[in-house]
Amino acid sequence: MARRSGFLCFALAFVACSARAAVVEHTFNVGNFSVSQLCQPATAITAVNRRLPGPTIHVHEGDTVVVHVNNNSPYNITVHWHGLFQRGTQWADGPEMVTQCPIRPGHSYTYRYNATGQEGTLWWHAHSSMLRATVHGAIVIKPRNGEQGYPFPKPDKEEIIMLGEWWNRNVFDLARDAFLTGTPMDPADAYTINGKPGDMYNCSGGNHKRRTYKLKVQSNSTYLLRIINAGVNTPMFFKVAGHTFTVVAADASYTTPYKTNVIVVAPGQTVDALMVTDATPSRRYYMVASPYESAVPNPGFSRTLATAIVEYAGAPRTSARRRPVMARMPAFTDKSTAHRFLSNLTALVLPGRPTVPLAVDTSMFVTIGLGTAACRPEQTRCDRNQTVFAASMNNASFVLPTTMSLLEAHYRNVSGVYTRDFPDKPPLAFDYTKPPSDMDDITTKSTKVKTVAYNTTVEVVLQNTALVALESHPMHLHGNNFFVLAQGFGNYDNNTAVMRYNLVNPQERNTLAVPPGGWAVIRFVANNPGMWIMHCHFDAHLPIGLAMAFEVQNGPTALPLPPADFPQC
Image 1 (tube, rainbow, N blue to C red):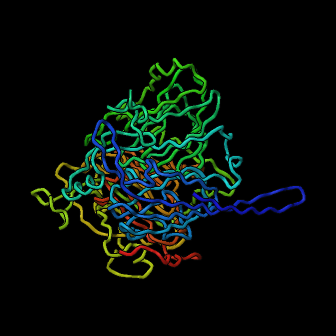
Image 2 (cartoon, rainbow, N blue to C red):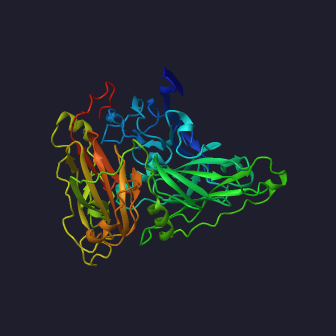
Image 3 (cartoon, helix red, strand yellow):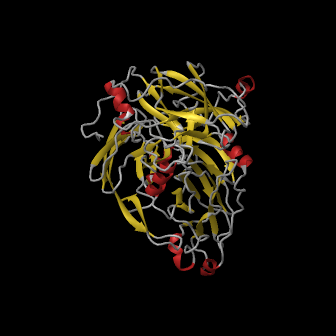
């Protein structure tokens, strides 16, 4: 990693000010290497620079980031900079066939983007197939003036905690087989903390201690934990035995300080939390990530725990021989604990920061859920009825184009790649949480987008449906943050929900876990020209259609020219 900084200082009568601007440069060599976990033979995984997780990108607000990606793997690859707005650098967003064609094996591409107007924890990951299971890393954006710019007490130290999932199979093959058969994806074999499963799994304790992450801390210090759920399909509960947290940010947006002993983080989400190390220093403590399984009926998941160990510096050697103190985790299906955490966060309103828009230009009511669809020609192993597992938004099951990305088709005004008829409401209104038993769950495949004028304020009600299962879907919007005005269970009722809208300090997110069998209301300003996908951040659901896209037209700012080295299909 290279960092080129320039400093500009102006002397005023009684004030000294400094502005920091830098170009932060990385090279990502994407390739395969073998890893052995859980007593299994070595598995070939795809990763960046032979690391899991991959390298962390450290920047200050206002910096420019340049990442040279060399694809030495056998698979097509793209990299998405999750949560970065990409204002003026829309071509660098990264989702395959939305923003760009993939980087083919043996080819390279350089991503250039800025980190302007954002502070906090974000992350990067592959946006091709299911490769983000192992192709991912953190992005840390500090205030322009460093730690002294935090709107909370400066921590003594910061640590990145990346939660993940592990399969004993090659994940590319796993995703391909699920698509060809049209059946649900197999659950993970284990969960991980910073790439390591911990000592609750076979071959992870005893002589295999290097497969357990350890965090050594100083007593009576404050640690800022930057927690990222890089998992593929599983929301997580997170705790550290004997310790509590104060949440200060979520998805790189500052929050009103929120005290809790458990953190809930869905795939794609990040949480920044302060932890004071005030426990008995002669003991060790488990850091635990456990699955939150909201689906009813339950499709099956690994009922296991990922663990790391928190050790106090200077503790007697005898403490290493004692089993760490275990955290009491919520039940895997504890919906109330998850909802309490996810719905109680509020924004820390700061001068100069965006506030929720009060006037709405475009209102949408969008159902999200699972169903079935006709088998596509390339799905060669469908069932006898020639239907496959599918997902949809307003009964439109999204299909990515194959010949040109959505953004390039938008820029070049090429017809036939997508249509501008994504509906503002579902084709049929019904009891979404208890649909009739004889109701048809068939959806149709299409590539529909919603076109909005520049600077349009969009409000979207996201309504979960139970045609196949009730489930909390983590919905991620590219290119923008959104305000979460309200959320709840059951069918959305505008008359009662509006009374609950938080129009003062609603939490700001880029990824929202819609309550299972419930709804959420989001609002954002479409002031970033381009093509921005909104999709479920379960990798099991994006390929089967749980997505749509917003086409934002040019305004005072316009979509720039594509880079000269832009990948071609």
